[in-house]
Length: 146
Image 1 (cartoon, rainbow, N blue to C red):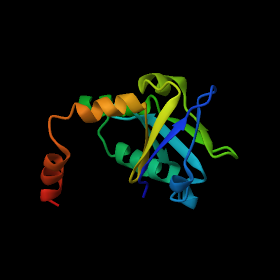
Image 2: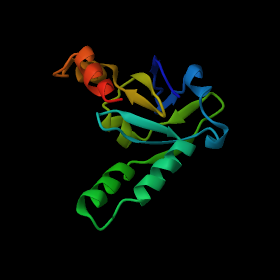
Image 3: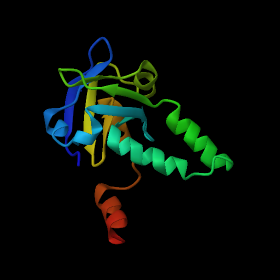
Image 4: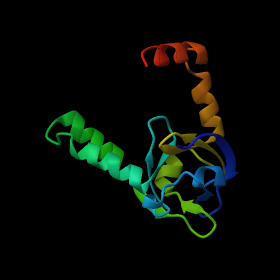
C-alpha cells in the first residue's frame, strides 16, 4: 500500500521521479509500469499496471448502453496513458494531464493506498482548505460505519 507525501520537481520534459519509499510497494506484476489518468479532484492518479487491470475489469462490468456508465468510462479512460519507469525511476506525464492538474514545476506526490496521486501543491492546499468539514468530522463520519 502506498502512503506518505513527498515534494518533488517535474523536469522540463514532464517527468517525475517515483519516491523510493513508494517504489518498494510496487508489485513485481506491475513490471515497473504505471497507468495514469485524471483523478476526481484536479490531480493525476497513478496506478501500478496490476491495479489498473483490476480497474479495467470493473469497468468491463459496467453497462456501456447505460448513459452514466458510458459517460464515466469515456471520461475516465480518455486520458489514460501508460509509461514504464526509466532507469532513474521517472515516468513521463502527458501534457493533457499536466494541464488538467495545473502542475507547473513542483509536485506533491501522495501515497493513496492502491494508487499514487500527483498534485500541484497549491491546488492540494486549496482542496483541503475548501472542505466544509474538519478532519475530525470527516473521520467520525467515514470510519463510524466501518
